[in-house]
Length: 113
Length: 109
Image 1 (cartoon, rainbow over the protein chains, first blue to last red):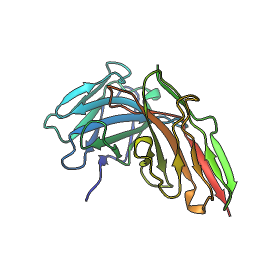
Image 2: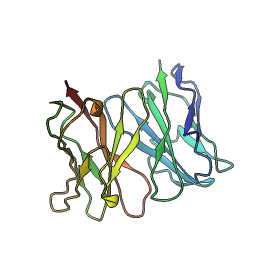
Image 3: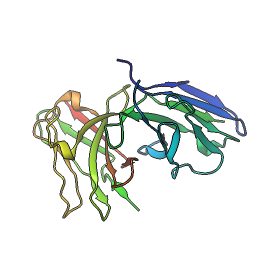
Image 4: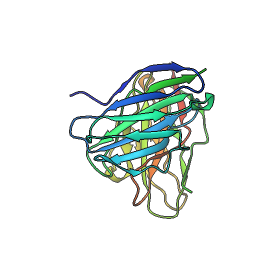
């Protein structure tokens, strides 16, 4: 079956702009995660959804970052007033439930000029 | 805070030689440890997790709570093992994964 998909695969924007990154989890997966991977680093946790609610948003770096999952499936990560330091690969993962294997998407490479 | 350390950014071995990728963690409770792998132009995928105690593609990893380590081993490396490897931990009561910086493994022919 289809894996986790993320769109766009690449996004180039200018400093100060607003961006939205989309994640389509595997069908039926109730848990959804966002991670950020900077160059030369491992993925870093941002936020975790169980169903429609954000169960853990402790990794969001500041209030410019926000994520939603209104119907418990697709999720959108929103970044306001982008900064050059936001440039990274944003990864989404989903799992069938808590503590189950997380399946990762291909990522969105965000470049802020 | 929980932390995962992979001391080697790069590791290069010859085909047929044994390989060991090191992973150390800091966490006072009972963690769950994972190894994820990313082959060239592919997405990050789970290689193995310590609770399943299985061998995947000839790789094994043993959790050593005394040394807080979870090293990944394979007795005879193959060229297709060349990839980026990440060690990760999950703590009790939380769903997130904490990743190490990764080790790029290159198997030379």
